[in-house]
Image 1 (cartoon, one colour):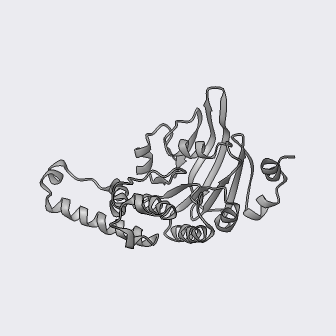
Image 2 (cartoon, rainbow, N blue to C red):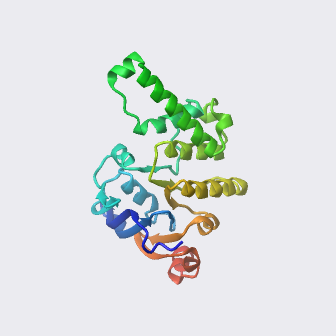
Image 3 (cartoon, helix red, strand yellow):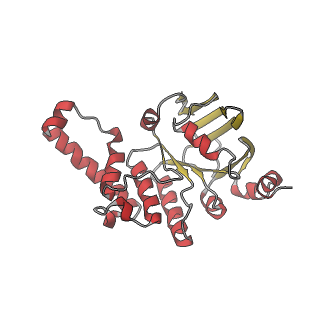
Length: 257
């Protein structure tokens, strides 16, 4: 997909993050364009998850800036970043495992729902209408990832691959502009990876942009429009999947000289 002339939805400008003397990220620039799936790859410890943590408000950057549609979100807490349309999944699942599957997704759907205290306490018609709409939205996203038949089961009873899809459904229920996926294929078998790839493509068709960190190179090369490669917190390459596969700097980062 040609990103020229496409609107920049998410942008990082010289994003830098230091932990004491450790330079986790160093002057990293990136752009995610409208309608795009952008991949981020690199060896273990290269700074990929740190970048996602900075973008999503878990860590403030040491310097640099992150913009959503031209508006800075640096220094904002995670829930405010989410309200700006940036939602994510995590490398280590963060589900409410003792709650039903549907409730997990309803929690995500409540992100954009605002009710007056009076309506909540009295369970007014307004409150009941919003609860019904939230439940309908949650069921829609469960069906989207193929888990509608699991709605009343406890999240902890789902197989690992379905727990991954549940976390994605919960994020989608929050109406994201951009979905950050942190190693969604980790621990999945080949059929589960293929199902995940289908879900990611359909998310893009919903008008949601995707920024994905992943070690499964087959998945990255299959679904991404562009790929950024980082090593030791710095960008070493950027381009289409075909360009990245042929890049000597990428081969050195992964295989050594």
